[in-house]
Image 1 (spheres, rainbow, N blue to C red):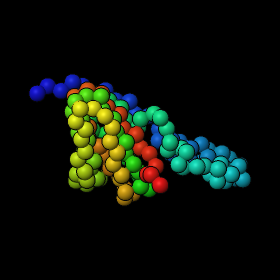
Image 2: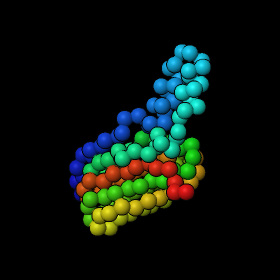
Image 3: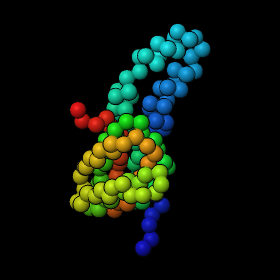
Image 4: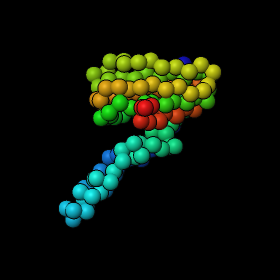
Length: 132
């Protein structure tokens, strides 16, 4: 079986890390503290842009979550399988969509993870705050 080269769009930097980096770059101590105090993590994580998007097969680089995070995933094809791995390479969960559509999975424990996606066509994955 020949797989097409993966295409990948990684949404720049993690928005939370970017916001912290911006605050860290402020020289004035009072202004830097105000910047940190004004950060709203839930708002930073809420984006319409997928964290990962691609076509066919892709293994992501490891990423870190510091709080429970909901993975929302969509597929445009008839087959989509996503495996969630922990830092040690153990499969945490196998997820799939048959016939296209959308699914969600709550990654409850902070830690380092990576994803392996296999799809018959295009797919997208978002990181979102868990439902209340």
